[in-house]
Image 1: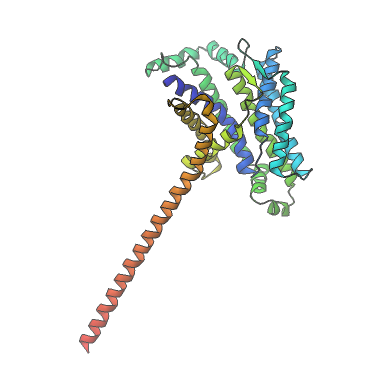
Image 2: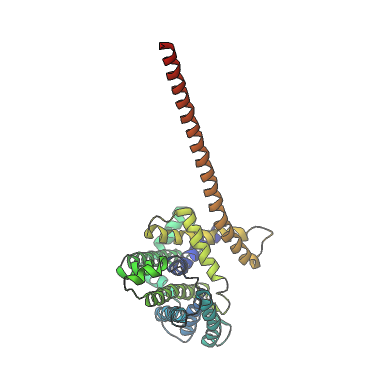
Length: 343
């Protein structure tokens, strides 16, 4: 059980990068970008095929990010220059990427079982610094050393990488370009009145979004030691689930809080799925159903809670008004009685 939860947190931190990409397109740009299901696999496919051909895993991961950025830009061009509906633009690019990904891999699945990956490189760095033993010692000290896989360094490294990406995202969204990007998602007509090029901003935003998605795909492929042409199916739902769960639990007061919420939502989502799959009547094939159920609950429950709170506030206001009216009536009655007595 503990091992499963550890793995859920580990993979959740990697998927959080993808969730940040979905947050940029859906929340910041208000663009329903379904390219995610394709660009996630593109990142995985490029990283896998380059590693199999002897390329450095860091270089392979970087090239995957560039490919994801270009895929997002093409979606943006289809919408802004081709005047195609946003939803349809994403669907068209997602379909096109399926064939492109097959071309890249040459087959439907590329195993990486005996290949050097991003994570083996990272583990080697920590080992050379003598920190891998430190991580395992910490696990043993809290009584988890024998229950957990010896991948503390992987988790620690991914937490650092995800936090760095979060901070960079926060900083970017506070720049002039980032503010213009946010304004484009809120009100295109308004930002156009300030002579901003909303087409370029949309293309840039979608490019950055899919770059993060492709990075997550590349890391997941190396983490799971395989890339599969179907591994991106439903990825947009997982990203949305992470965003919705995070926003519902942690709130959206500021950009920094919201991006943290997205990361937290991704980790919580993976933990919930892991726990759900341990229920006897659920199987691995039910994962998509579990995901859909989580998203539905994440959308409905907060609204039900808000509606209940609003009813409570209305009842409280009505009660206060009734008390005020009663008190005012008593005062008027007392004043009238006093006047009649004086007469």
